[in-house]
Amino acid sequence: MESKEAPKRMDRRKLIRNGMQLSLGLSLAGVAGWSATKSSSDDLVWQLDPFKCVQCGRCATECIVTPSAVKCVHAYALCGYCDLCGGYLKPDPNARTTAAENQLCPTAAIKRKYIEEPYFEYEIDEPLCIGCAKCVAGCTSFGNGSLHLQVRHDLCKNCNECAIARVCPAEAFQRVPASTPYLIKGDFTKGKKG
Amino acid sequence: MNRKLINGLLVLIAIAIVVIITKDFVGNKAGKNTPNPYEYSVDQFRQVDSAKVLYHEVLTFPVGAETLSGIALADSLVIVAAGNQLLHYDRSGKEVFRKTMSDTANCITVDKEKNLWIGMRHQVAQFDLNGNMQQQWESFGERSVLTSLAVSGDKVFVADAGNRVVYQCDRKGNITLKIGEKNEQKGVSGYVIPSPFFDLALDEEGFLWVVNPGKQSLENYNADGSLRTSWGVPGMKLEGFSGCCNPAEIAIMEDNSFVTSEKGMPRIKLYGQHGELKGVIAPPDKFDTDSYYAPDVAVDAEHRVYALDFDRKQVRIFAPK
Image (tube, rainbow over all chains, first blue to last red; front, side):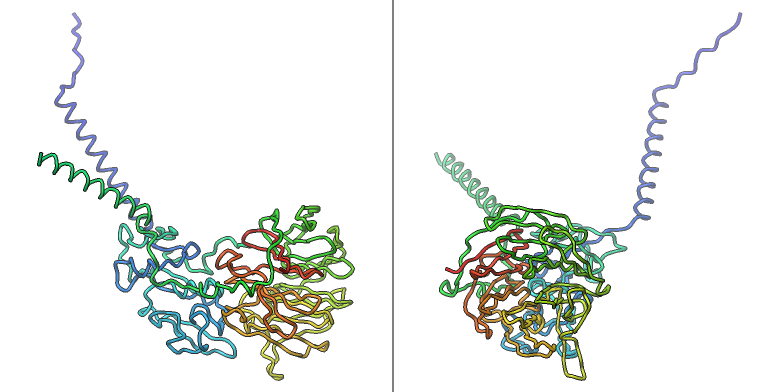
């Protein structure tokens, strides 16, 4: 008589143990894969879009770093090198000179240098700049908009929730890849208005 | 009794707290509406004494195009160049003609024979009133940015902001004279043009007036291209021209009064033939704040001013009060 062997049955404990081992293995593989992907892709940092910026002053008052990690930068290629510079001089100044009473910047962080008649160059003294955007407003309204704000990544703490981004009325703050951390006017343009 | 009173008070306090927080959140838009301690304000210069406003707006009509370039008048027509569109409106604002051009216009003018002269970025083209091209000149070069045209008899004046020069040409496009070119030997510093706003116009005697925007002045030239006179003062006050590049647009009336249009703090003003401020045609509060573009302006024989508002995409007509 031919004997038939009964099919092998897995007991419940073994099934649970195998299931847990499989789950653990898959989880570990998943975490390892995710970590590998994350480490190979770009990290993100905060930056502000100069074309969205409305010069509200929040970059000066809200940043956790003092003075702010947001600074004015100058796109020289866009600058008109104007004598009557809307970003440097107060509206209707007494004279077009470097006298403090004529300067728009509250911390005198812009240096005016004579180039040739009638052109002047404007340079930002970044340690003095508090990121208030007053000069940006003047330059944008009455000049070419070459002065604009940028988050300086040597100063920014890259907080998870940026204190400025939280209150920025123009929602100009965004996360950008750390490999291309700046949105400088001239290099970065928006569609021409007209 | 005491317990009920305390509970009631607690409920009232809780409601008050909720109301205060909600009011603050809504009014302040979660911290986005607080005042700016570093605000750049030119509000004091926006205020204009109503006695100085000599004009009022009599008609406004929309321009059916996205990109506006310039405005000109011919008989009863208001002609608008809008990108690559040529649009005609009657004086009531009704669109009566529309044609697509081969290139994008930067500026437009009409001569006495009712030919349309259109400045593209590098080239000038002549059209008849129905938009049929009569001729197209050769390019003024890659660096050229044509911003204004004026025609008098056989002379066509072309403002080139890119090369910082005014070309005097014959009607075929041959350059007969270069005006305002930088010449260190003659001590001519040339035009200061920080941005592509560089307008010109002819007065009733046919003399050329050119805006030197970086010097906030208007310069008048003799027939040989030598400087005849100039006027203009920088400043935000009413009599001055503000910012780096103003007046961005001009027009000259039959009595040789000047209509000037400014960008930054848009305003349209009227000056006498010697550059004395007569009054205001359209004060800053008539325009959107901080416009990058000054309204282009044209004038008719009744001294009405036609302003092409780039922000609102409208033709706005102002008449003397």
